[in-house]
Amino acid sequence: MTDQPAPAEAVIRTAAADDLPRIQAIYAHYVTTGVATFEIEPPDLAEMTRRFETLTGGGYPYIVAEAGGAVGGYAYAGPYRARPAYRHTVEDSVYVAPGHVGLGLGRGLLEEIIRRSTEAGFRQMMAVISDDQSTVSIRLHARCGFEHTGVLKSVGYKMGRWIDSTLMQRPLGEGNRADPTR
Image 1 (cartoon, rainbow, N blue to C red):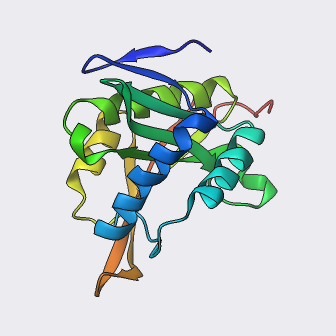
Image 2 (image 1 turned 45 degrees about the vertical axis):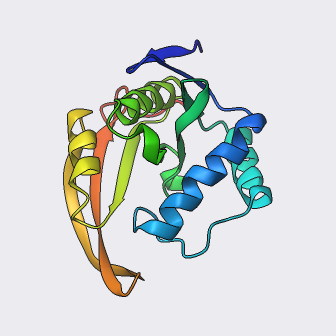
């Protein structure tokens, strides 16, 4: 896989262990300031490293967008669910650093994670978007071919309120038109 140019003079590339402190900082921001994730306490660097190694060791793509000499965002695909019948379906995660929002990094990251997941042989991609008020993420996923498939009402409680999850889905490659080879 080659590294891809991204909007806003950024480069999207495979994430490396050296990127993890910045990835951890970006994620910690979203854990502590909003409901983009249902985690309550930010994972430390050791936990983020363990997660990274588990995903990359399992053949899942994990990428960063480098802009202005720094990691401005990251994305990965991971298992949608643990049971074996779900092995052809992945869930995407995309996080853009606060100072890099609005530069097109999110779309570049999502498009690249879709491409790499397709190349890896996955057949469906799910987006589980916290809070139906997250219109930016919903619009981003819709622009990248995801369809709205449902809303799980009040499934999380964070920051003093109940939070919904919007589900969106898109096929990868042949999707369900043929049996998977993976």
